[in-house]
Length: 126
Image 1 (cartoon, helix red, strand yellow):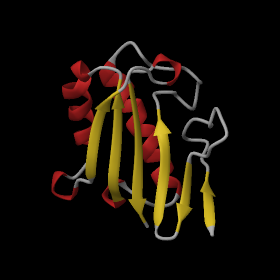
Image 2: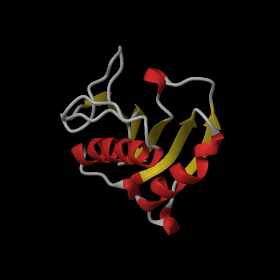
Image 3: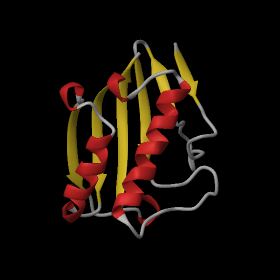
Image 4: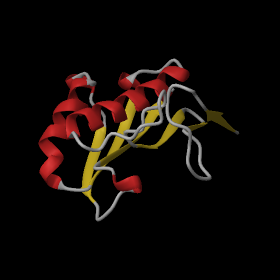
C-alpha cells in the first residue's frame, strides 16, 4: 500500500507524479527545484538562493509527514554544472546534522527542468 504526500508549502507537481510517496517504511520525495510555492516564481539567478529554495521545498514535504532531515537516508543532487558544487554543498550541508548525514551522490547533467541549476530528490525513513 502506498500513501501520497501533498502539501501546499511545496510546489505543485507539473506532470504525472506526486511530491512524495510513502511505501512501507520509506518516503520517496520527487526531485525538487527552486520554485517558490507561495508566488510561483522560479529562482535561477543566484545558486545560493536557488539551493535554499530547493531545501525549503524538501523540508516542507518532510514536515507534512512529521519528518525532518534526520530521517533522510539517501539524497541525489543533480547539477547543471559542477562549478556550482561548492555552493550547493554548503547550503545543503547547513540543513543537515553532519554526524547523521544521509548517503548521497551528486551528478552533473546536460539539462534540468525549466532551465534550473539544481534539483534534489530524497528518500527518508519513517
